[in-house]
Image: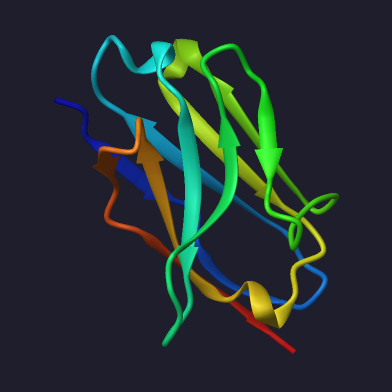
Length: 112
């Protein structure tokens, strides 16, 4: 069983930055792929960024060049550094592990 806890969300002006953290329980966490998803009001949940256990990454086209996903296996934590934020980035951001486990989500609001 893996428990995920997100943090780092908040209100920021357009052009600003936030760093989200996803802290995981479980000693096997570092062996699995982890992803960040987001869901805006009235929209489907969408994949934002993905990182494998080896550190390979991929991103949604809408965030390429602005967001960076990384992981610190010693801390059982995955991060999402978000720069040059836009109002359309406003959503609840969720951490996902192995496509099975979800965190409770953290709200990101970007004001124009």
